[in-house]
Length: 173
Picture 1 (cartoon, one colour):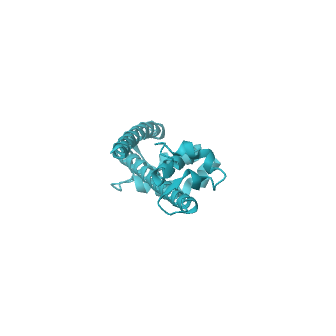
Picture 2: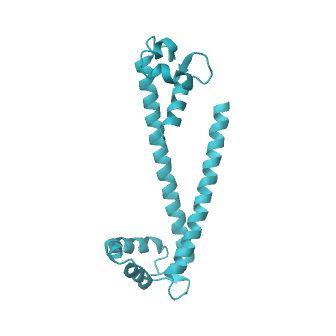
Picture 3: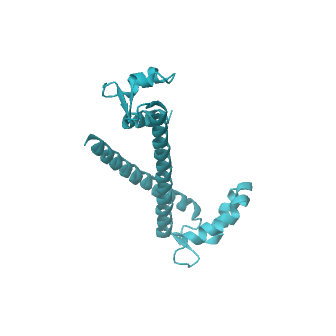
């Protein structure tokens, strides 16, 4: 029950963070749009994108082929101009892509942590009861040293969940 509440709380925090990031991206897109809209007509045209390439100097020449694709992707109604609304839709799309990338990275990290937990149990759980006793932990040079940190319920046994939580907190360091 505590784990479910904790995961639900984490999910809520992640959603709030994603909304905050989208708002920030939207604000930045508005500022960028205003800077690119040289004639202040509330649309970007290919000439304004060309001016961006020129302002970027050598970097502009490197990314020039991609900017055409980017322009076409943003021009949803295919009228040769990008409106403020289209730029906001593009910002939402790119923010969504960034969020999906973070979720994939989190899933990979989770899979790695599960694998490490399983490996730890396989190496140290001699009697194969799904727990590591203090005696079993002594077989690992660091096992005895970190046992107290991992054994959060002080029952002198390490479960897969305790090992996973420990790895989760230490792998980011």
